[in-house]
Amino acid sequence: MSTLKDSMSLAASVATFDGTNWIMFERTMTAYLRIQGFADLIESDYKVPRALEKAEISTWNAGPGEEAKSKELYHRLDKMKDLSDNYIKNNSKVMGYLTLQLVPSLQAIVSEYHTARDVWARLKTLYGTPGTALIFVDFMKVINWKFDASHDPSTSISQFLSLIQRLATHKIDLPEMVKAMFVLNALPKQWDGVTGVTHYGDTRGYQGWYSLLGYCGTWFRAVLRSRHSNYTESNCIGRVYE
Image 1 (cartoon, rainbow, N blue to C red):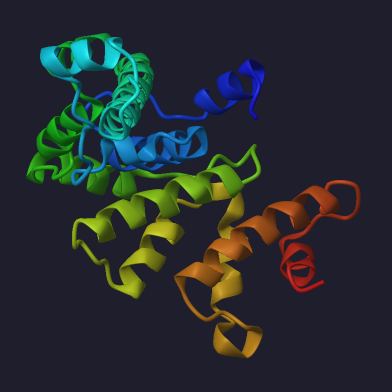
Image 2: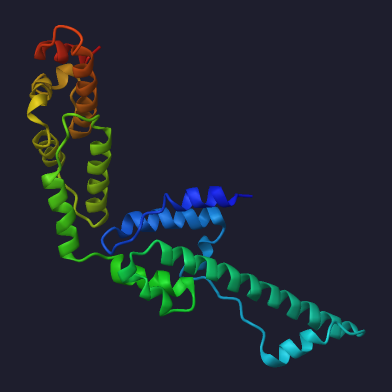
């Protein structure tokens, strides 16, 4: 069973939804709810357990009785009540999780509905299918994406791959050569040697934009090693293949 500390740590990994990052929010929130055992409560086909009606509550309060039929009815109502009570408790938790992971301007959406399923459906309707403007924002992020020459490129590479994946999700499939051009355009001036490496072509192992991303990481580490030796661009090109 997860502790409160574990639960808080997991919750911290859920992206805060601001209206523009639905894909990341959907993935992390769904994963979190799955770990907590509540993922089914936001599924569109989830059937909310029916609460007992007033007459049924009176029957349940009277107890099982002595007759077999009375006992059978009581146990059926008891099971229904248990399912309903558990749902109310768990639904309240999920509603709370959703509220905490929405920016303040969006939290009012939660208060408009009684079930986490309906809140999730509303969020998905509003933000799950981004319009042209939001897709264009991601496209501009790809165009303006740059490496930081002073930091390991792994973080920048992850950001770039995430953007490419998001565009592909919305049926914006960029040609392989265009992706390679974006990567080359993102190189800092200090990494001009990476472009030189690609000139070696297939004879030196370059096989596309994805491989080029790998070269960027290798190049960065080669430069670090060369700082304590005789640094030349040709040294770094050679060390890419060490």
